[in-house]
Image 1 (tube, one colour):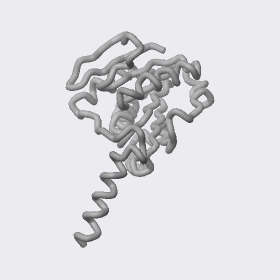
Image 2 (spheres, rainbow, N blue to C red; image 1 turned 180 degrees about the vertical axis):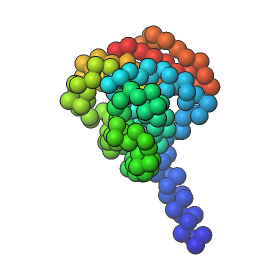
Image 3 (spheres, rainbow, N blue to C red; image 1 turned 60 degrees about the vertical axis):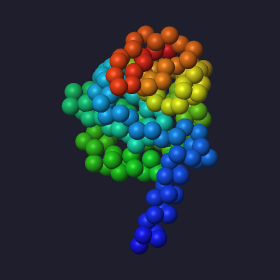
Image 4 (spheres, one colour; image 1 turned 90 degrees about the vertical axis):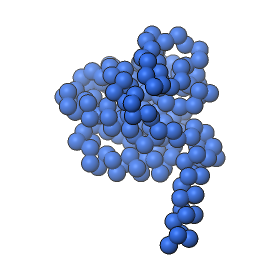
Length: 178
């Protein structure tokens, strides 16, 4: 049994942290900052929150729970390139009280055409917690697609933008208007 479990654990570890699988490795959100992140999203009725590189879905599920409690009818889209993380989120979505408003997408966030899925929402928020060398490219991608929205970045600021607001936490949360 140990001969099966140990290699499986090594394989899963490699898969989560390998740049061959994903150029943006998985790092969990610090739970002490979760309420600050959800608050920074400034969710409104009939808005949409898009989590780029959603990882294990911690932020999207917490935000969806808050929207459900506040009866906001906010829609949530979680995008990740890692199929194991998408599978993990899919299981979490099955048991979430707001599952009807959560969509999971397996794919490369830089290759998604966001305009068609966002056109009916006036309030749009992109949430990112990704490696610092991708924050600027992500900001440009959102700008280039003319997606009038807000960007909430956890831990890493967007290098070429001045934040509109900064929330102090264990790790800071940066808010930008696009």
